[in-house]
Length: 471
Image (cartoon, rainbow, N blue to C red; front, side, top):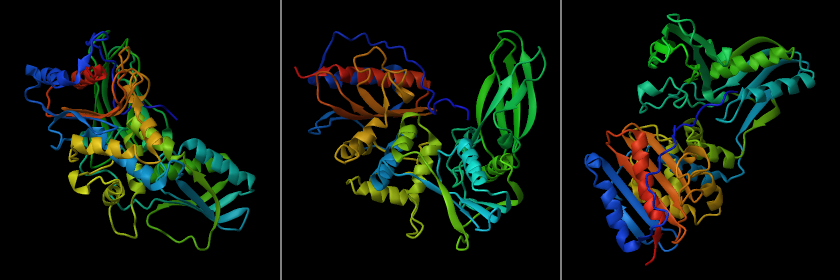
């Protein structure tokens, strides 16, 4: 399985705050932050900030703290908290495998998808080996059940330009390899088309390619663009890549995840010498009464799932966690159940509005106050350390690995990033060397500045907070 880059492509920021030898008194803090935000280039931006001490909930700074903002991936703070509260850190998602009892030739082998986002090809290969060891030689009807087949597995509030890329995949019940595949474009001789290679031929055969690319002159500008035809699975690739450039790696979505799962399972079964007579993807909750449970595939622990969702800002993992919250018997949506779960922490369900679990939707509305309250309430639960450790650490890992390096808070800030065009956010915990622990949320919307510059401004604010001390 290939390794995709982090969801939020956090670049290393140039730290312009040479403040290691200064301190900021609480009385000076408001003016310090106001001065940062009063720059002319920020006048049209919409900023929301709330900073509180964790122990006694003293407000150190606030600006538009109760106003709504598009939070981007800060939504994951809500989704992962709800899943952790409801299921606990050790919970595992189980994918059951059923079969008929007429060995060695099974009339039916059935895999029932339950939304495990961690499933990889290697686990299907292991399953095939287990069945071969059990003596199975033939399967008359191989069935994989994807109960989301008849549902809309692409969120209708996501941007159309996003949904061919790996960070906006289909979120169904039969997920394999994160429903993504790696596309590699490689320069050839000058003027020739770039060659196209896929990391997985089973996923690749779902896409048709219209290759209109060209190998450009040495050191020429990169101009590759990918456009999807929404009437059929066709990618049109245009533009050029310089002849002296390294291959261009692009993460793409799998068009039909259920079929991809079935094709992959069939491939590994046949590789083990198990013949398949017929195979199909089915929807709904079909009967398994006449079948026996042969085995089950277990996911990684929920602790590892929420850590990947938060530290790497993985949208598929976050949406899968949201789907776990669906209660089909209650008739309520996953978001209704998310709110009901967080209401147990006294987080008012009427103070935020969600359309997804990852933050890719621009229809989500959350205030800095809601996120600071959530961060505070989570520290009062038995899962507080698991939750806190699931966040990226400044200068150390995840989407914060290249931020806050060589500053006073390197390793002392744990937070969730968020980035959409025109929007940037960071919410989490900080341990200033000479002050109480803080919970904070900083969000900016409606900006025409590049994301890297917005992140630098946010970091500047936090570095001032890091120098806070009583004086």
